[in-house]
Length: 184
Ligand SMILES: [Zn+2]
Image (tube, rainbow, N blue to C red; front, side):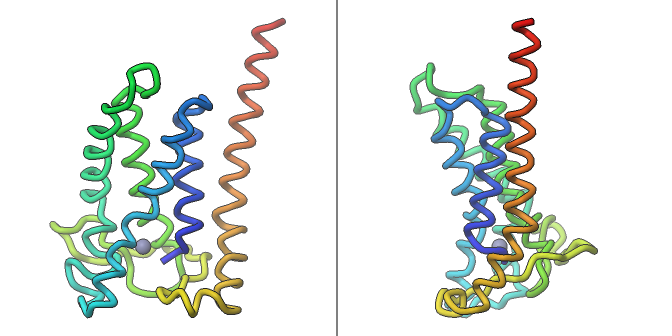
């Protein structure tokens, strides 16, 4: 897996890109949480669920189907917010789907473990992308706190943090440019 920090950073970035207004910040946080959520399967991993099984690590919880289920449930929950506060349901569903699905996307860019079962439960093959620059994060917190964790974070800063910052910066630049052209 990539670390929870990288997943949450990408999810929150997607939140800011799709729902840019500041009043929607709780949805940026929600998108960050959804992006980290699929690694809930690491509990099963510790309890002995085989890595390469349907419910194994990077299995069903990392699939596009799981992302669609999380998006549907999250959008329903979102309807509890006051109408003035909540975004359009379609936009929220898209955000939560992309944020949750982004988890598998990042994991498929990592250097270790098994691939991601994007199409589970129909096709349980595991996939990696041909280009895998992100150092895989250890599942154990103790291992993450050592030098290995620092190397993982450095690689994620380059391959996840930097692109996220560039995307946010370009969004800000486009908004500033459109505001100033409207004033002219
Ligand atoms: Zn994962």
